[in-house]
Image (cartoon, rainbow, N blue to C red; front, side, top):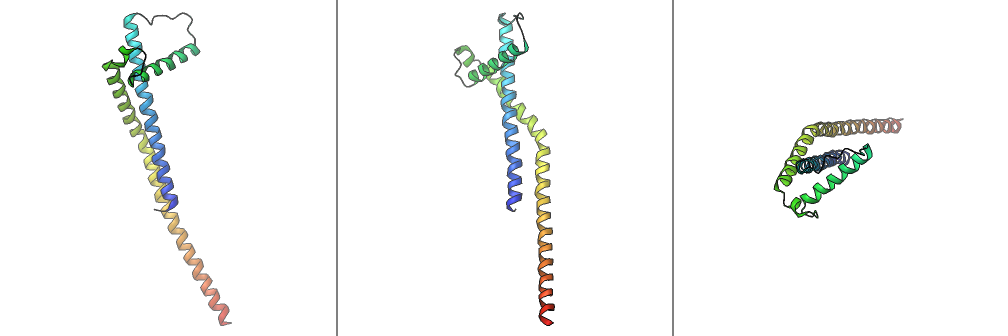
Length: 148
């Protein structure tokens, strides 16, 4: 493979890797948030709808996501969350599901990357053929000029 084909292949792999990582993290975090909300509803700590706004909802979601990830890594201040096996298992399953979903959707990127490499190879071949034709024409012109 040439430099351009290698660059295109690496670009496709990098793009797919970023998508996989992002999907893993977001799906894992979503499962953690669902677990935290469920456990708080069961305790009766989460039935406060007064003063709700879109901004406060987004801030609450970000806070829950942070709490879930802190608990996943065992560094949450509440030690009961750090040792919650259900939370950790649900987050692992969510991350795996995220990888699977992105892998399915990422197949299109792999196809496009493969197609780009094949196109680059074909263009390189055509360029080499035209270069050889131009070189041959130049030699013929030199021969004709010399024979005059």
